[in-house]
Image: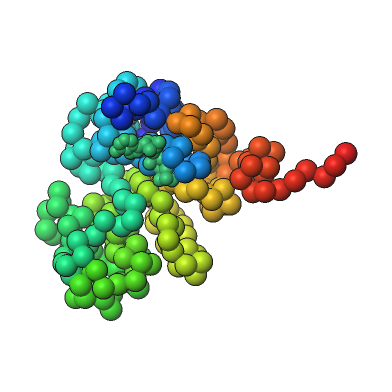
Length: 238
Ligand SMILES: Nc1ncnc2c1ncn2[C@@H]1O[C@H](COP(=O)(O)OP(=O)(O)OP(=O)(O)O)[C@@H](O)[C@H]1O
């Protein structure tokens, strides 16, 4: 459904993505993994229209989007949960969540709201609380809830586990699985190879702005290069 085809991105004169091609099928969970500064966030931003590619094609269900404004994406079923959550800290949790439905009719938004609270019951007790007062993990839940309010067919998640405790990482993973099982495709990025590929159907390894490896989650975890560099597994001496 989502396709990036030979996408190049520059920040000023600096090229940060080099002919990046990535696809996400309907209902798939796909990870983009790579070290710090490899361009993972830029891939998601280019997909969402938050950073315009200098060349290449971004398409959703065959429709080219790279020249269209970012606001078109939610209408086409695409939504993003931004890195470090980016909530409005002085607004209530409920107000933050409802902001995700700005392109929708009130009656539809209400229905989605019920669905979102069913998937994320943890935020129910905090709906009237000021968002900035919640823990990092709770704020991540609110950010996911906001992303889901657009009723997306594909949800992009920029470093969804950043700064979370191991227990909260487990929670967020379980939520991602639930969302995916409900038929929503997910494209997320993450620095940790195990976290990235253990849960995803397919994955990509990005290094210095280039896709250097791709395969099923299992294949990625078993790949000697991933094992050696990112999982710290040494091959037994022959
Ligand atoms: N707004 C910007 N202006 C200039 N350069 C940028 C900007 N945003 C990112 N970059 C540069 O682009 C490259 C890719 O950044 P990006 O944030 O996509 O990487 P990343 O893999 O997501 O890294 P991290 O894991 O640290 O978030 C980096 O070298 C970064 O310094």
